[in-house]
View 1 (cartoon, rainbow, N blue to C red):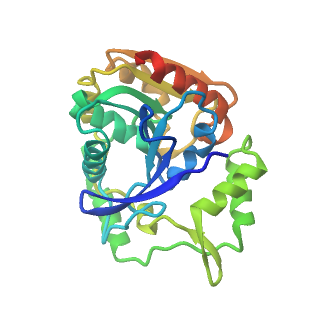
View 2 (cartoon, helix red, strand yellow):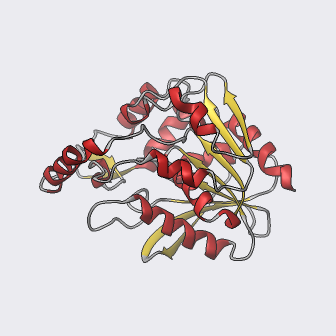
View 3 (cartoon, rainbow, N blue to C red):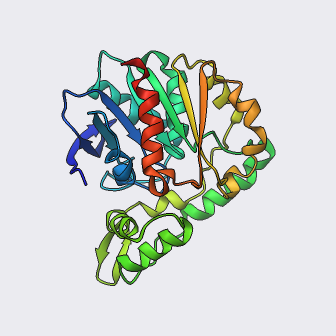
Length: 289
């Protein structure tokens, strides 16, 4: 398993943890993880890349070993964090960028806001959320107010073995060895066992409704080639239950779109089928070399 190098940088006034794989003079590829995950999620994909790359993956604010917020988390902050990261990593050259799930949604918006900064874009299982209606706003705000006044936290689990079993239960193709490695990366020890590293305030509802029309307006401004990567088995989550039925509307926003489906995989493709994901992503990213 190739070793990563940890680095801490200040991004948008937050202390960020980054993982680096490969030599700094190799072609750069930046990887963005999803919700309740961390940069460790890409380890198995990275070890299956055949080309020499300099791969960089941040832990988003409030995840992994990056600094937590003092309050709630808002989507535009991730855009500013990413903008600062890419400015520091590659100030003059556009970047090859991959995002998974939440990371893909951030990457897709960013690529439309800053199209000149992206060379090629891979979106893995991250094609937006369900469309919302303005009438949902009062209830959403009310729930957020209730949660801000609540003590939000995680219950400690006995050990990393229990976490690994939960990961395998949700991702049946994940090997036990990889599940145990991920369990150690996603948790930290406490006096009562282990607990997730992520800030529990990520569990709070976002008071700002997801506006599909705004996301689509950003996607239409993307100039880079885009690869959609999907798992064969649809992601079963309330926030995305309506996405698959509106894929045609969403894919029409991308001027230079290609797609691939990874057989047998579910939402966590980088865990379940990292070899196939590495091959698909690398073929796409190498098209400009």
